[in-house]
Each structure stands twice: as C-alpha cells, then as structure tokens.
Image (cartoon, rainbow, N blue to C red; front, side, top):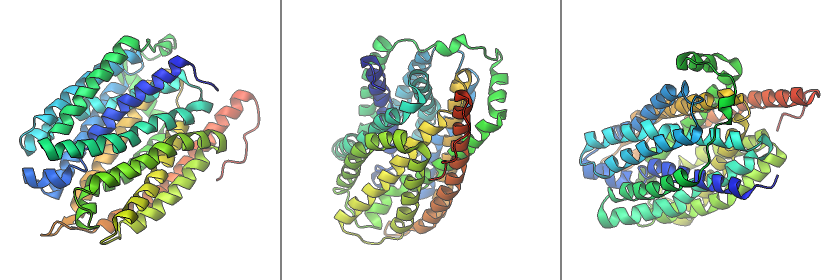
Length: 415
C-alpha cells in the first residue's frame, strides 16, 4: 500500500502528538537524579509521582471509554490535548512535592486518553496490513523524544532548572495543537455505525466481550516492564553504573538514534513476517537483556550505550507489533471504547508497577540503588506470560481474517 499525502500528514501529526506526550512522561525519569535532591523526594515518593500520572490516566481512560465512539475523533483529540498542555504548564511551575504530584495527576487525566484516540484514528484510516508501518513511523516519536527531547531537556534543565523542560514541551504542544485544529479533517465514519446510546452500557458491553478481555490482559502485562525500570533508569545509570550527569544525555541520544532507525524497519518486518513473530523475537531479546542489565555494576560508557540500544530495539519490536496486532481486535463501532479501556488498563497496571518498584528499590546513603535485579526478574517473568497471551490474540486475528475471506484458519501462528 502506498500512502497518500494526507495519510502521511496524519501519521506525522499523530507522531508529533505522541512526541510531546511521551517526552512529558519520559523527561521525569532522567530528571529524577536532579529532582529528588532538589525537592527532597525519596525513591518511594518519586515512584508515587510517576505512578500518579499513570493512575489518573487510567481513570480518565475508563471515564472516557463510554463516550469515545460518540464524537468525532478529531474533537476528542483536541479537547484532551488542550488539557494535557494545561497539566504540563502546571508541572513547569511546581515548587514542591505536593504541587508536582497534583500537576502530574492533571497531566495524566488528559494525556492518558491521547494515545488511545491516536490509535483509534490510525485504525480508522489505515488497513490492518499497513498498520505495522504506521506504528513503526509513529514510534519515531518515541525515539525522537530520546534523541532530541531528552538531551535538550537535560541541557535546559542544567541551564535553567528542572522546570524548563516542561514549559518547552507545553510550547511545542500548543503549535502541534494549532496545526491539528486547522489541517486535520473530521474522523467520524464510526458515527454511522449503530452504537449503544447509554455511555455506561457501551462501556460494560466492551469490557464484557471475551476476545477483548484477552487483549486487555496482555496490555496490562506489557506495561509492567517499562513502568518498573524506567522511573529509576537515570538514578541506576548514575549511581550504580557510574555514568555522570553530563554523560547521561549521550546515553539517551545514542539509544534514541538506534530506535529511530529500528522503528520503521521493525514496522515493515511486522507487516511482512507477521506481527506475532516480530513480537516473539523482541520479547526474547528484551527478557535476556533485562536480566543481564539489572545486575551490572560500574560499567564503561560505551558498553552502557550498546546494551541500552539493544534493549530499546527489543522494546520497540514489542511495542510496534503488539499495537498493530491489538488494533485488529475491536469492531469499528467499539474501537474508541476499546482503545480507551486498553490505554486505561495500561496506565493503571503501570502505575501499580511503578509504585511496587518504589517499594522494592532501596537507596543507600551514597545514592546507589539496591534490589534492582529483583525488578529484572519480575519483568522477565511478565514478558514470558505476555508472549503466551499475544499468541492467543494472534490466533484470534487469524481466525477473523480467515472467516472474512471464507478460508480455513492458517496453522502457521507459532514463531
């Protein structure tokens, strides 16, 4: 499939939306090494700040699910993006732990729905056979947040304080929102389909469908790994691996550059070789690297860069293939609710994971983190279970495709 100019514009626009949302979330982790001593925040409190975004995002996803298929998706995107900008500005003017906690809750309430709305737009405008490519291109936003956003954010935080990155993100988001308002066409084909008038009934109906429940379970486990390791990634790099604060942007930039190249390639591979096969290979690589990485001590900079790059390639393969596969599960008139619930469960389970990680991690007097390897074991176990769940989802999608084509179900579902 060759994309039209408008389709390429939509992908680019959604990528910029994701860039600001992902950067807003990711910037908190590298700022942790600076923010915790500035605000006198303990590892447990920092885990609470991170999980506050996740919990509020999860709550907003549940609340929005019943209404997600009742409105033009463009309007949904603009409304929640405006709220996200407000929350990010509040983070930029926070002066203590409580204010920052409140600001993260506000940001999560609105930012948590943007990902699901973007995925619903993608599923509405692009066929399943091309969604791996679309997800791969959108994943460049995740990588660009590392290559451009995180190093620049750390640089400006060193110049003007840790508040500066949040205000810069808000400024970029205002420009992106203006382009979306002026150029994005209405996305309302789903409104022609019959739907439950009662929002709560639509929510219950979506949650109750067994094939959706398998996808929800897989999503919950998928988010555990990132939320457990990411919040303490910078502190672990600085105090356990021996990376300096000046070297930290180099690590994020290098791994992000690798991810920018890997994202579109993985997207094409997932469309050609199969979503589940790509997910399986990425999961094996992720589990092995996590078990090794979380046991490292003082490590040379070049090796930290290499192992982080390999880890992010594995994570990228899992994210792209799982999102593309999951997008084939819901019916068009359930798509908004399904995506919202999916994102909500992802954030809620991620919030629990971040909070649990904060309870497991112990900080020594010198700043080193203890018990990080225990998080690695938990992540590897969840990766294994997730592979089994995604295998089940892959069989469902293959059965749906075969039924639509009037052919028998293919047997080549294993990696």
